[in-house]
Image 1 (tube, rainbow, N blue to C red):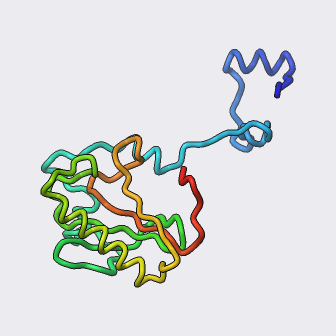
Image 2: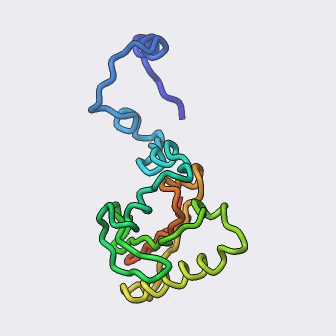
Length: 168
């Protein structure tokens, strides 16, 4: 599909000197053109970096009670709390209390298998307790391109509605 534009607009566009009006988006001006904007989570992930060993992540601060969270489950290895920006009626996180260098899934080693198994077991247990018997999704974002914005391994448990596929 071709877009016809007048010579004045073409000259302004090519010179890049036209004023930007925030009331008009590309989608408003050209509804047939598909425009995909980067989500705030993607931009957070692009700006995030792995913490230095001495740096505390947001989740480290939640574990140590320096930052409040809506924690509804805790055992000796992990804790679960509601996501502050839920993407579904039920959206919570399961995190290890001691990540032991496990900032992301791709950092996993043989000795992390028991912890990773425990996190998955707790995720399904809590999903059932929260009424997600008909189904739910477990997501682990890994690294910059995986949209990981906090470098403390964590599982998102999402459900309470019919989820779509593919997820992206």
